[in-house]
Amino acid sequence: AGALVTSTEMQRRSDNAAEILQEQRKISKRMFIGGFFLLPWLWLVNCLYFRKIYSSSVGDPAVKFYVRWSFLGCLFTTSMFIAWVVTFQIWNKQGWGDSLLVVLEEDMFT
Image (cartoon, rainbow, N blue to C red):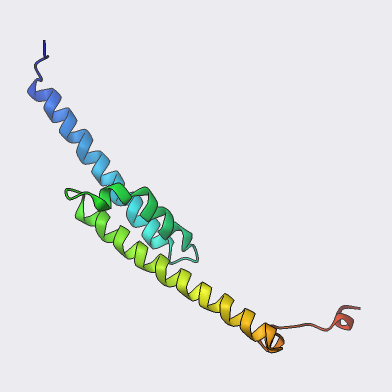
């Protein structure tokens, strides 16, 4: 037999759901902002952690906003990093790698 749910129990569940939603918003926003402070891997973590909420049709719009922009930030940062690595590798093979680096002479420290 099913148990009856009282109005106070419903209120407690509703309050708990609101607290969880607020906590998810706070975590998502902190990860998004943290990505700007030279921690772009937080954007990837944000996308992976909240992927179910983002793909859900009933997910919180605020969390979806931060996840969407975290994904775009991660994509941009990764693209720039790959472009830098490829450029450096191509220039290094052509002998121009030293012009991209600050190379100190060994006798400078002796």
